[in-house]
Length: 148
Figure 1 (spheres, rainbow, N blue to C red):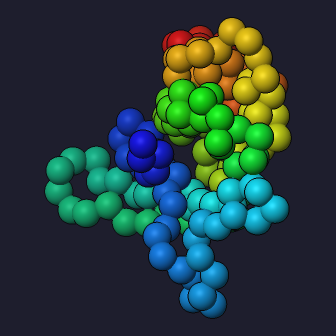
Figure 2 (figure 1 turned 180 degrees about the horizontal axis):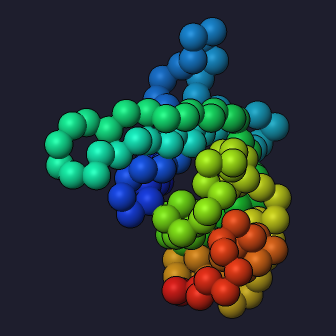
Figure 3 (figure 1 turned 135 degrees about the horizontal axis):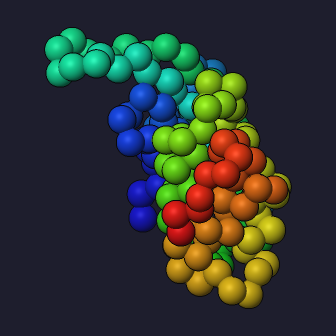
């Protein structure tokens, strides 16, 4: 399963995971105290209105986020991450606040509450739960319908 990158519909915003190591030799993903630590970049692009010209980077925000050890070795991990990817793409596409968000906003402690729920089993189930107002849905305009 390849989780990253996750882009919005017009590829003007996306979450990316760099590969390799940073300038100081720290790996971009590693395990610490059983948790998976991943470096994520939220990249915002200037996209030309027509097919002329290349897109250019407008802003880059990078943070180390934690994927809790309680979910990543479980059978729920793959459908959860696939649902998370669907939800993140939806938020990046429809949020009016994408420019103010940080990578950690997409991987915070509130999203992990869906892992303990009994009903989500498919990626779409997880995406629907993740887009609730108290989770990733809080960055969507009021009245936005959950497509899942």
